[in-house]
Length: 373
Image 1 (cartoon, one colour):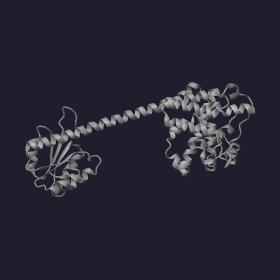
Image 2 (cartoon, rainbow, N blue to C red; image 1 turned 120 degrees about the vertical axis):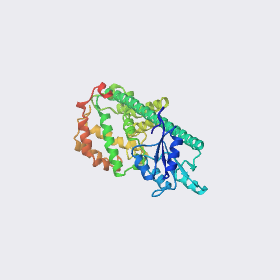
Image 3 (cartoon, rainbow, N blue to C red; image 1 turned 45 degrees about the vertical axis):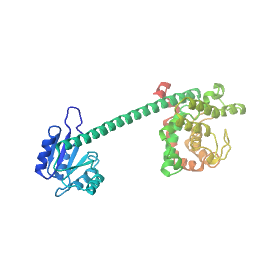
Image 4 (cartoon, rainbow, N blue to C red; image 1 turned 135 degrees about the horizontal axis):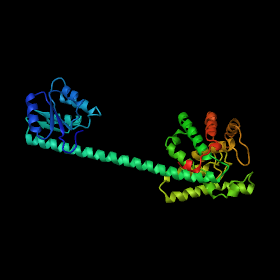
């Protein structure tokens, strides 16, 4: 729209009366670029080349009258915001009401009063210009918010990646466990959504944020000593008892972060991953012995991803199992260790899980700098 400084604004004057067109151009021509048009059809033809700042539209015209013309204008997203002033020789109160209801911003009666015509046009163009500037401001503000949100997400991603890296690089036995579990979760959640399983819960999740927060499910291992964390063999009962405390330690770490940062929603979901991924469907898990649907969905889906990854990869206390063996153990855990609906979905994704394990195999682990990038 032509609203730049030092440039005349554009008005279309649409009237089937040549005298009115000539008079309107004379009155307005000194102040605006005026396009006198003898019919609504000509107006629409001209609109293909020029978008005016305002339209003066006669109501009583042959072929297509002003009411029909404004209805078409307002139905087109390209033209709907152009202010339209109806021009008529006789306008009753009901006519004015109908015109305003159709989207006209004002009525002007013929013959024109030059000063009144100019002032009304000036007022409506001023209002329109203010609307345009406000829209530009809102658009700029929206873009700024979007950019700030992206920056915040990138900052959160960097922080969480670095914290997750600390866990992975201390726990020498798990390799690229976090990268693999993120991918397991991604395909599992996508499948659940596609099949309408737990859709009420999943539909409100921010999936990228969920995957980001899942990286912290083992953050509590930071508090476990290297002697236990990297013991080259099976843990003693006493050592395993200490190892299990990584769940509570992880929740404590995330709660401290929650109190000192503005990542509330993000950290709430991270806490659910951390606190629930060692619970079992039959209530025999830890730390709280939660059972069935009392276990947060985050914990139930992470349990499958976490156990599958432990099975299919090498650990100090065991060699890696095959993809088929690992998948069968998950399926055999239906109703005891794992949520039956989730294992049913997992069963249809065995090949996807195996492909992820291969793609993110530990022998392809990136350096710390590569991981941070």
